[in-house]
Length: 215
Length: 215
DNA sequence: CGCAGGTTTGACTTCACTCAATCGGCGTGG
DNA sequence: CCACGCCGATTGAGTGAAGTCAAACCTGCG
Image (cartoon, rainbow over all chains, first blue to last red; front, side, top):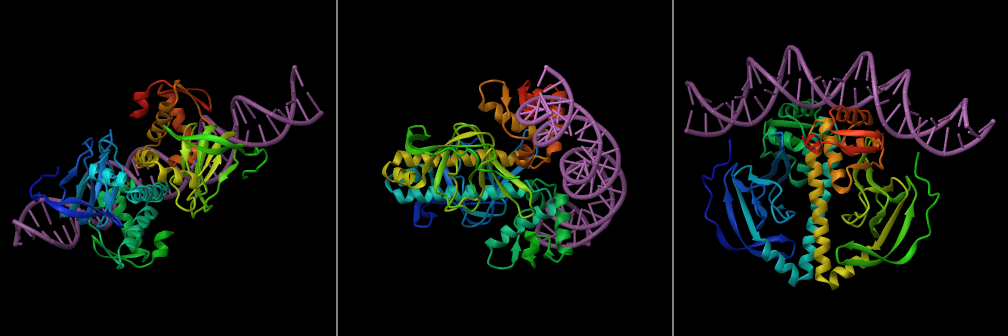
């Protein structure tokens, strides 16, 4: 059931990781296999992470055993920045992923030295917060099809092409949107029938009508 | 239907507003009547606000006309900090509220001068983000009673006494939790029957069993 | 070629929404 | 001081959308 650290690569040190435009800091890169844990809930927050390739989900388990996926992180995204002393969620690679790591202490020293770096970090956190507010608005919306549509729309805005390659399963999407995997699947079906998207395969989505998704 | 600026007080300038522990900045205080707008959606974000007394809701209207309440702000809370150039939501006083205002430019100058101030602001934003993540976890939970229970629990942790005075209506709570006002009312009823809370009056809640609320 | 995983589809149930009526407190005015 | 009216809250009946359980279906991979 759980991630096994089968193919964790030996860390490569001495890399420069670009945390924000104009803010590159020394760190290391590691490769994580699918379903491998990057950091755990309640774990001390030692690093800040950046997705170089692959995809990551940050999730936590509720008291009733159900899982909540806070967010998905795609190449270019920085995550683990919002944590306090310990992580409030765990992060796992969805597919094989190359991750850049920068020590928080490195970050803090850079912020102290350089006011511009501090502002970049502040701005990064603010943008993350705005993202979260959007997602909140999405979730407080009830209609399942709209939720899935908005989710796909957000993904499609990231990619250059109209075709999306989904790294995550229906269950992952469900746990992110507060729906069951069956409902997510039915929403895909309805969107396909309504010509809003096309589904060449289960994990490949072609966005046909962005307006219909936003509806 | 909408806020009317009936009793807006003339602003009192030259006050020191405590934005964060050890970060008091010059600003002004204003008093807003119930349902009066503090700032509007799409409005330029000129100030950062702090609740001195009363209660505030930040909300926005979705494309389908329904209202989403992002958060409630109680005395001591700072809001409007996360905004970019313009506000992404509007803020209204729920009851008569005294609000402290500090210009963003004042804040930014303080952050540039003083590294510690910058860190305080960063930390404030991070805490707001963590709050939002909690709320997200709450919302992706389906059970209406649990949502309301968790909401009351969060409120009760703020107050010193076990008795809560709710400034907001059932509809406000519903728009915050993604429920209808009737469902909120039924959840209150169920929690009362289960001895988790007592309801001396509609707007007064006595928390009897915190464990039952968390369940 | 067959297995295992994720995905789709189906039948049934449950829970929240909708619409509607009633209740209750509070302020106003007679 | 009491009666009325207003507004928010509660309660009820019926509907609909998503959840649950279960079976069938791909599809990539050993």
